[in-house]
Length: 222
Image 1 (tube, one colour):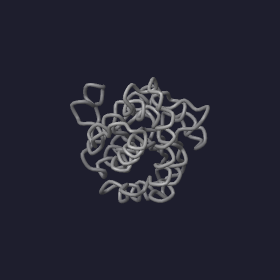
Image 2 (cartoon, helix red, strand yellow):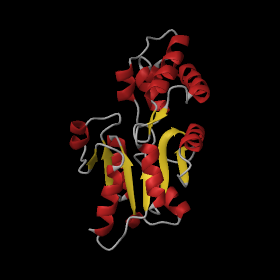
Image 3 (cartoon, helix red, strand yellow):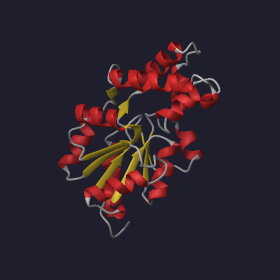
Image 4 (tube, helix red, strand yellow):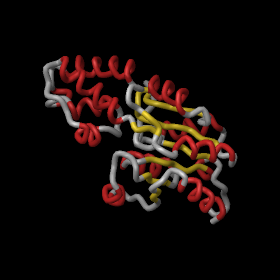
């Protein structure tokens, strides 16, 4: 990366920019209750997220997709979450200030998420006006850790992967960055802890959002 300045920052959403866990838990448990299934704790839901909402519900529903009530539970989840995705959700402390600072420094920013695209668009519009493009889970687009959504983002922005870096909080994000050929910054305020992230190959860590700006500046001049 010595000959390339980082110009583009691609963020994960849940667990990286937004604390969405409470709303995801509430939507999960609403669907489970309606179907007469046992509810899940916040910590269980924390471990279930990262691979899209269908996989979240596969993990939450007893016997997953083999359960005859799975599809009904999944539909109930999607409807409820679509109406309540911002009840308890909030930007992590320091994130709004970070995005303003990166915008002031001239960085292009994007969000790539496995969350339902409609929710990604709504939450991005509500919280992150500095972000240039946001892409969520869409039909005919392979979800993370496949690199397709990252490549689509770079193509729409007219940027190359040599000038981009990825920021996330999970093993899925690490794999996405690796598959796309991007370096990855792992945040430590999200849904996975440092030990878990190290086991999955993380090497760049930040404990506070504004540290990301420092990492980017160092990456641009190293």
